[in-house]
Length: 265
Image (cartoon, rainbow, N blue to C red; front, side, top):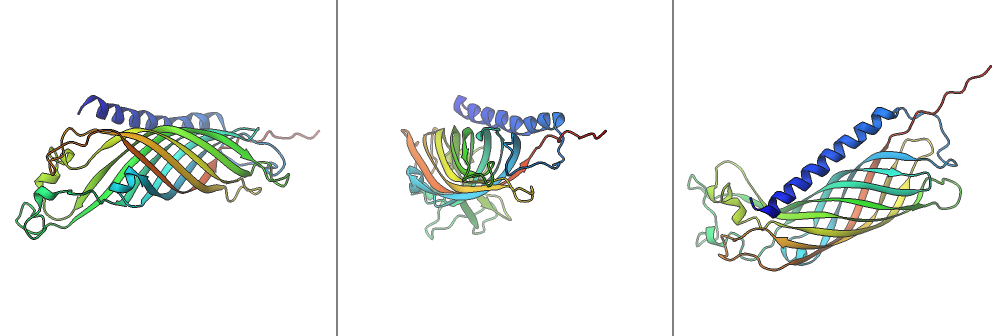
């Protein structure tokens, strides 16, 4: 594992640990019970955890290698009383059809098949996968005074993105597509990205349905990490411009402070 690969692994570990630990710390200082409060007319500060899903269409160099991606992830954020927003995210990329030219060409028989360790024709599913890890910030602009904690949601972000080709097969083993040979076929690339999002943020007055949704896009400059592709006999060279545009939906779990008790004398 070279220095850049170690950096990718280390950055993922740091963000995952932060994603899991910060909500726990906040919860220790806040009550999770969502007590009676006026969500519609009172500006609220709200730490929260979001479970996200969606998908995007790849653009530029990413489109030459993959089809549409599905996304699933989680984020931790804080909406302030002034409707500012900041947080960080971990999103997995999965399910994209891989369309890399000459992929596995050195393993194919004359009939265009791959033979497993037992001498049978292998059934292989080839898909794109990866992850986005980053921080983001933005603002929520209310539509009038009916609910000042909901409205137009504008957000930008920066962070790390990596993607590769994954191979899934059942029954018998295929040694060429297992460690230590797998890195010679997976086309792992890693780099930094910038992103933008525009959508709607909803904090329900009765605290039943809290969610957001909208359109997002990103652009990334990535670098191939593998020193050699076994199927082509040459490495990927130069930087890549990877981009995408799609939709993102989030189910939001707010962490409200317990409202102060009122005493009557």
